[in-house]
Image (cartoon, rainbow over all chains, first blue to last red):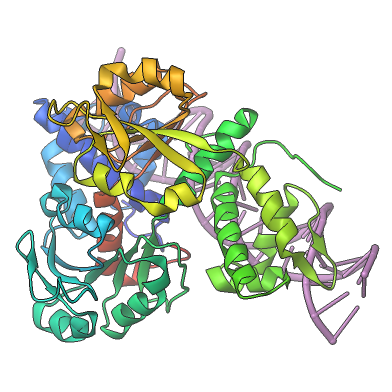
Amino acid sequence: MAEYHGPTPVATVERLSVYLRTLQEAKKEGKEFISSIQIGNRNGFTSAQVRKDLSCFGNFGRKGKGYHIDTLISSLRNILGLGKKWKVALMGLGNLGEALAGHKGFQKSGFDIVAIFDIDTEKIGTKYKDIPVYHPEKLSEIAGKENIEIAIIAVPNSAAKKSIQRVVDANIKGILNFTNVRLPLEKEFVMKNINLASELETISYYLTHPDRICRGV
Amino acid sequence: MAEYHGPTPVATVERLSVYLRTLQEAKKEGKEFISSIQIGNRNGFTSAQVRKDLSCFGNFGRKGKGYHIDTLISSLRNILGLGKKWKVALMGLGNLGEALAGHKGFQKSGFDIVAIFDIDTEKIGTKYKDIPVYHPEKLSEIAGKENIEIAIIAVPNSAAKKSIQRVVDANIKGILNFTNVRLPLEKEFVMKNINLASELETISYYLTHPDRICRGV
DNA sequence: AGTTGTGAATCTGTTCACAGCC
DNA sequence: GGCTGTGAACAGATTCACAACT
């Protein structure tokens, strides 16, 4: 009955992506239907949460039966915007950049790194894993030509601000930022920050205060 | 006045780590005091949030003045449990594993990768960036000897379950998991999942539904 | 004047619990 | 009998707003 009830909680969106993976796994196991209880169990969520999350986007379930896996997979893919290939620019070809360029998971999910940008003159003009490497000042030009809509920032922290600015100037609206620089942006930009040291620091906190461990960390 | 009010919100802990970095940056700029407003502005948080978060752990501020940077840095380091070196095991020496092994940020924050585990017989017995590589079945033994308390899982998804199980069996309580396998664990374990494809999928969602962009994504 | 620390108010997200359907 | 979808209750997190202090 319901459909769109105002902005969807970020947490819901993140779980959608988890559900999708769970469904793909269940499909591989040969299952045709799956219940919210099972989806929850496999991931440590409650079944009510799974149902509530899904109900934000439509009535996908069959009472007494659960969710038809194939149908739900394709619905979730649509909701998440995975029906198309996304072209991605990778900023920075250091350690992390190389790992990301070689990461199989991206392509499988429909994200294609089509251009790499690095200031190292030895790298510029060459290819890495078949992806051409350019000087960052070429970003706007290439992004326009190639229709790049997402950028991954994997430069050293010292270069982060400049690099993010270039991405914004090139009007690339989606940003996945691996540096520890946090830059508040205009609201039409979507930036997700992944800070590896922060993640370990959070773990360190909970190991140091085991009494404080609570819900899904 | 306050001190410990029951379990600290996960979100607060994650922000603590952001504050710490902000303080270190401000210190480098030669500042001695910083206000909650400034900490907030640099990161896109409200000042009230910054104050509330910090007030969970003590009264660090001076009214009319702000927070003394050096003092707060050392308090936060204590709270986060960064007063010691943490020894870390890296599971998996593929693309991502190599990048993580070479990541400078970890060591700077006090996390030392002291052992790598991989099933590739060509790698076992060698060193990567001066870190010895062992067969995963050696994990318990080495972890005990070296006093390893944190593990990073960077193996292929297909090996994830087994790898996480080994870590649990070795009684390593802190886990940073880069695979897309989510495994509910006993509550004394602290597992943080980082799923690169999920992050991009979340971005994809918000780019596809620009009307739904909300608060700090 | 400027800024903290915090109770109270608000807002957001989660869980409960059950009617309705298969 | 089993499971969804959802309003209502609850829990948690954020923001407001102001007294207290420098």
